[in-house]
Length: 431
Image (cartoon, rainbow, N blue to C red):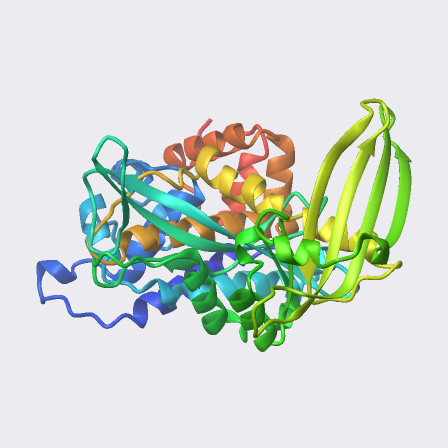
């Protein structure tokens, strides 16, 4: 079922490369194709191998061909500096369809059915993510702020959008929206503006997912909620009492609908206390919108105290039948932090590493390709039997990718399918 997944991704990159307006000079500047640079950079993240291209050159000297050619379909491998110069000329928006294709493929084979919630919806968590910072290397698009020691910290940030579900380990990135200064001026772009741009650019394209957007308290404001409703979509945002005092104070405690569920975990007695109220105004000033408020407290009998308390607002009606699942959906927001941001930064993808900064788009393109590699790994976990078997045989993530790097550097394979089947077994193709 998973055969051809990587090949489809590579063909999509070829289409991106073919669509770039090539303004380079004839001669040396044009010795590398944009599509080769894109696939070469993508391979670095897909195999979690910063030195991949150098090792592939060594393999080619021994075998006359390399896996970059046979598996990634790279015609000619550019140097790291030349690759960054090429990346700098590409607009990150060009990769929107590549992000979409991965999800469409997963949906075509039924893999997204397991992410359904409340009967027909999918959860899309939103969160701001830093992916570059430096006190020296910068460009006119960098965000910046003064540190306490007087130095200026330059950084790049983006709003990540990720398909999640409680109890599903695999999360799938959607197209991000980069937070960037357009003119290098003092007035900086911000996360809320980026979310509005994301909605304008992507809401229609992702409508087929029937998304419910999850986000922290930053998103539970009138402009963001209104923009989501204006696109015919839904939200379920964290709503903290400290930042929404008027909303919380406007609900009479006696008007709450209530439901309590007692559970035994095998170690602790827990009491889940659900409280909800439909039809409260989001803010005091006009214009405003009415939202539905949900509060969850978890009482731990052994500890004799409330060990969890959180509240949310949504446009979706809350009732006795769906309140438990609504709370479960709302609590799935943390997965974008733990299983997306944290994995990308600390478990092999090196999101915050400077792979090449450039002056226009290179830093953002590298981040986008990193996300696409992460997405493809997730889609393969759902659909690619060879990849699934290899991950089962090498369960630790770091050991799995270490094994992939060793074999990719050492032996020549004709196809991805041949390569990943070998990763999951003990046979030595050279022996």
